[in-house]
Image (tube, rainbow, N blue to C red; front, side, top):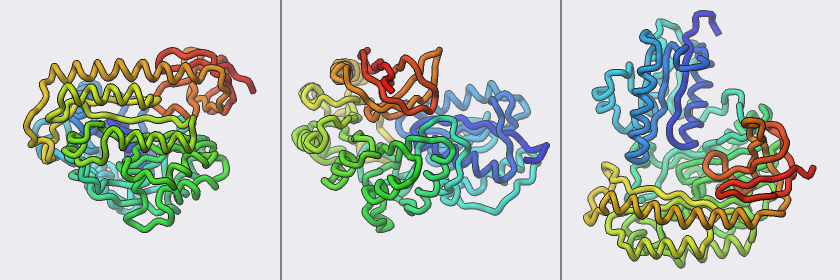
Length: 437
């Protein structure tokens, strides 16, 4: 890196897929000669990778941009990237005079040159398209013992509430050999757990006729020396066939963890969402998973307050939560996304009613999660220690995905270690354990 190279600092909002994008961009810009700042105050350019999934995420992104605009040096640049930049480029450029540039996903190929103009610096390296960057295998040196790997970009599903296809496009799967190369590099850098992500993970490979789809990819990755655990997030229930269930439940390297994107259980609402099934259809899928592995961990997410949702629909969902006994669940208020079919639907639910429903359903799931965790007491599990916080090792078993589920608090251990431990206590969403080997 040249001595006068501008230093960059990334802030990332939203999901794990955005985290991967930021890492790919950071690696690309490092190759182009740019340096890395240790804080936004020291950076020559601050880059904010934004989220546009729902209204709350957009507000968080805007707040982050304004906060960083106030924190950075007066002579430093500020660039807005990501989903909001892609979806609202013109509007953001006008509404955020604090930003020196707004660069959407499809303009990532221009980023190095644009930063060079802002900092009077000549970038090195060949020109790249945005997909070259997002599909690149080079990543920064891992700082955690787990890493997300994005295996596809975009989505083909027609869900009436979701705007992702508008700004991420149709699904474009990466070639298996590229994914393997990226995972090998991450494992070589100290990563023990790989988390596969995509907008529609279970549909991976269909657009490129990848052999075996997601199942084939999991088997391919399972052969990598040094990889200890493989996990998948974001599974559309329509794509979860017997083969995928058998692979996740039966492959010893794959965490028996199913992230089911169910969204609701009321049949009429699901049809309005352009989603499959109903409560009984979902239960059949759950029973099939638990028949393959009674100890499988299940997570899902649900939309609350979708237009037309009645009190009876909420009670139906509440009863489903009590019966299905998912290990983890998240609840999100309906957001009327511009350009989606659902944004035009009548019978909107009052905001106060939505808030009350969120509290009600969340309290039910908190009890279920606490019970599910209590059932783990006495079991011996394999754990990865993510970090040591305040002297306490913070770890996860196959049941806990990074950042979104609970954690296991250990009596001893160091970051990056794989240990076997006996669960000794359960405290809401978290558990405690004592190392046995």
